[in-house]
Image 1 (cartoon, each protein chain N blue to C red):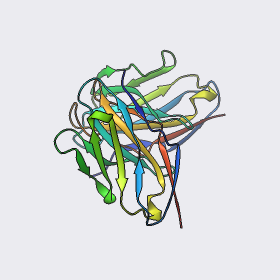
Image 2 (cartoon, rainbow over the protein chains, first blue to last red):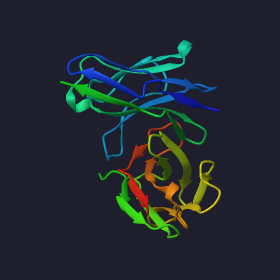
Image 3 (cartoon, chains in turn brown, red):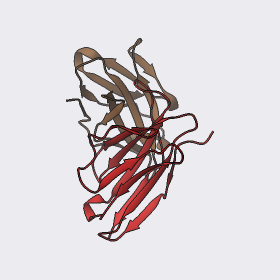
Length: 112
Length: 114
């Protein structure tokens, strides 16, 4: 069965510092991978997605992610974090009849 | 172009009552998905529907929960005889095509069972 692991429940980063959020997946076939962001009390907004092709994917708000098949990873990165990036981030893999399997999320806190 | 709409945004029910959650997909989208987010948990898939068809309900609890997506009108997630453990945020998503595709999420309905 497919699964997604986000090993970090909370991460605190100083404003202006770089960010990397980890995501590992388990899926038998070619994975279709996503990163979503959720602000408190809000729905999920898609940051970026990987379907095929270039393993480095650019998304909105200056985020990027790199697909590494050998490590079953799809880590999210941003070179310089802004206070407005504080939110919860979810990694997901698409499987079955178009259903998303999510990780448990990583809460990003940004310190001044 | 309106996004996915869900109503109500907040719903309070007493134990034993029924909860009805509505989802209107984005214009042109014919696929609807329901997910549940429990406190300190990620989102869990519940059900996938197309118009008048349930495609995958493998994530739906066997009892008290049902979903529909009629030919006309919004998709409805219905929870009968709610219990406190049903308190959660329920998210609807829609997509225009079958896999692989991006799912667009609504703002969610936060159900509180007293």
